[in-house]
Image 1 (cartoon, rainbow, N blue to C red):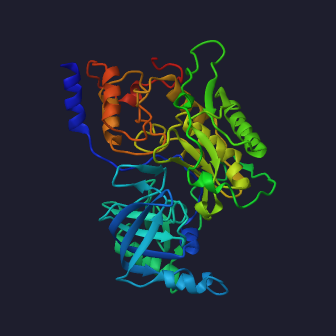
Image 2 (image 1 turned 30 degrees about the vertical axis):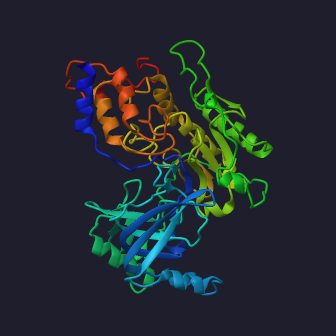
Length: 469
C-alpha cells in the first residue's frame, strides 16, 4: 500500500519536460555580440525537427519557417571575405531556414545528448541568431545564448533570461517585454536607423567579483582529435563510473572524494586537470582525481570545427556508450583551469540554476551557470564548495537537501521528469534521463513524515555535514 500511494502521488505530480543539464562551459556573449557575430538571425516557427545517422553521428535538422529577418550590423559586412555567403544566409521572410545540430534522438531510440544544446521542438516560436556550418555541435551563437523561445513571459533563453527593452536599449531582463516591441527595437538597432542600441555588457560584469587574470598559455595545434569529437573512443568498463566514493565524514580528517576519469596521455591537459583539482581543494573540497583508462567517464579533445567561436567544453552522452564524455576545445581555451574545475565539480554533483539548483541565490554567474568571460578566470569559491559538499553529504534521493526523503523530493523529481542530460540531480540511476527508474529509487528511500508548516529550505541546516546519511 505504501508504494502504491507513492506511485499515485508521483503520477499526479509528473509533468514531462525536455530540459537538459547545464554541464557545458561557454564564453559569455553580450546581446550586442550575439547579433554582431551571427551570420543570420530570424524570428519564426519551428516546423520540423528530424534526426538521422550520418557518418556514425546523430544529426538533427531543425526547419524554421521565417516570419521576420534581421540583418547583421552594417559594420559586419564591408571587407568580409564571406560577405556573399553571409548575404545568402540572411535570407528573406517566408523562407524556410535549416539549422543542424550534432545531437538528438533517432526513431530507434538511440540518443546523443549534449548538455545545453537547445534543440527546439516543433511548434516553438523562436528568435535565433546562428553561425553557418554543418560540423558545429550547436550552430547557435554562444551555443545556447542566441536562442529565445516565445513564452507567456516573452522571449526567454535557456537560463530563463527574458530579452526586453529598457528605454532605447535591447537587453536581457529589460522591463518592456512585449514581443512586437522587442523585435522592432532589435530591427532598429541592427539597421542602425535610430537611437536604439544593443546591450554590450556581460552579466558577469561585476567590478567587485573575485577574478584572476587569464594566464598566457602555450600555443596548441588547432586540429584536435577528430575521432574523439565523434565519440569514437573505445568502450569502457562500467565499474569506473566517477563519483561513487563515500562523501566526506562528519568528523576527523575529510574522506577524499575520488573521481575516476579516463584522460588522454596529454601532459598539458593532465597538468591543467591537476590545477583544477587544486582549485577545489583550496576551497575545502577534498577532491582526488584518479586517471583510469578503464573508467566509463572520460575526457577527450574535440575538433575545433565542432566548437565554433564560443564553446569551451561540452558534456555529452554518446549513443550506445556508457558514461559521460567531457569534450574539450583544442588549444589553451579548452585547458582553462576554471572551466575544468567547473566540469569536475559538475561531475561530482555541483548544483546548477535549473529546477533542482537549490543555490539560486548565490553564484548566479560564472562557475555555476557555465558562462565564462574571455579575459579572466572564475574559479570555485567557498559558496560553491559548500553547495557541492552539501550535495555529497546527503542521500542521492534527498533532492532538496533537508535530510529526509519525502513529498518535497517527490515533487522535485516530478518537476524534472522527462529531462535528459549528463549529470542531472534527479537522475538517480545515472542513465541520462529522469524516468520511472528514478521514481522507483526514490520510492525505496521515501519516508512518510508528519505535515510541517516549514518549507524545506527553512528546515534544512546550513551545515554541509548535517544532512542524514
